[in-house]
Image 1 (tube, rainbow, N blue to C red):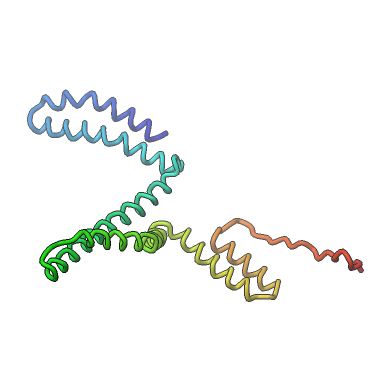
Image 2: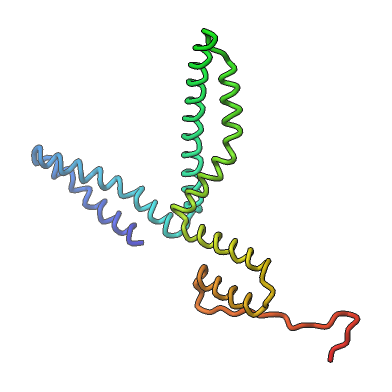
Length: 188
């Protein structure tokens, strides 16, 4: 809301820019700078509004852009490096190039895609989405403990501590279903 009001205020100031520009070279420089600055405020305010309200799930778009942009750049560099090196080696051995280098490089890129994607995604999560990464690591450690622990009270305390650490709620409680007798047993 404030950004919209700021834009309205700056747009009214923008009408004064032509008058400033007519006052000489310094005025022209100031007027040009102000008019371009006003134009830049529009996408800036849209970006702030999108990030604040989670509009269009911008964090997902940013995550995917970072992931696939860096993955594409890495794969292109590896591909070109392999093609150039293999062509150089084949020319040294046989005296001429071959399409075999392109096939071998393409197969290498296909084999590298999934592991490289996982590694880059993990790196992006660690760098930009630290809370999600830490929560995932904490839950993985708790699930490993869950498999080994048999004491229900210790598990209850660990679960409450884990939820407090990762989610940081105002209150945490765990409700356990009371033991009910099986079909063939009688209640005492």
